[in-house]
Amino acid sequence: MAYRVATGDVRKHLQAGRRQPILDLWWHVHGEVPPVPGVSASSIGSSQGTPGLAGAHACFRGLMRPAGEDDRGFDFAAFITKPATGFRYEPSMACPIRQYQIPGDLVFVIYARLDFPEGRRHNPVDGKPPVTEGVIMLWQFVECDPKDPMLPIDHQLRFRRRLW
Image 1 (spheres, helix red, strand yellow):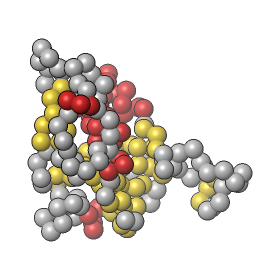
Image 2 (tube, one colour; image 1 turned 30 degrees about the vertical axis):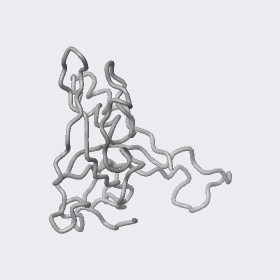
Image 3 (cartoon, one colour; image 1 turned 60 degrees about the horizontal axis):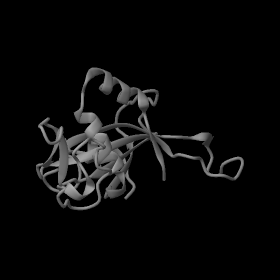
């Protein structure tokens, strides 16, 4: 599956000078080392699992609240990852970012609004699958559930259904 990233929010972060959401987008969503001077993939310490959306270990469908134009939150998916490391903006003479250990009581959630370009039918009109499945709208750290540290706290109340 392929997802686009909502460019409006990225532009707002850039214009406001917020660097952390952009670093999180590169590492926790795209799964790539942020392209900044002084950082290379070989200089990154080992991390547990696969970074980014490809490393998601759980997926939920539907939010238990309205979101944007979706009054019921049905057309959203939430992908859950448990990254061990992240990048933080800490400028120095050598490099503007630094790798850090993420506390074990957090999970990373990537929210995507699903596309339905042909309506809600199961087969596309022209027989070709759509180019993307949706738009990534939001990404953030959330406290994990004490009973299941791989899932967000109150996941039964946040999401409608677990897909995997």
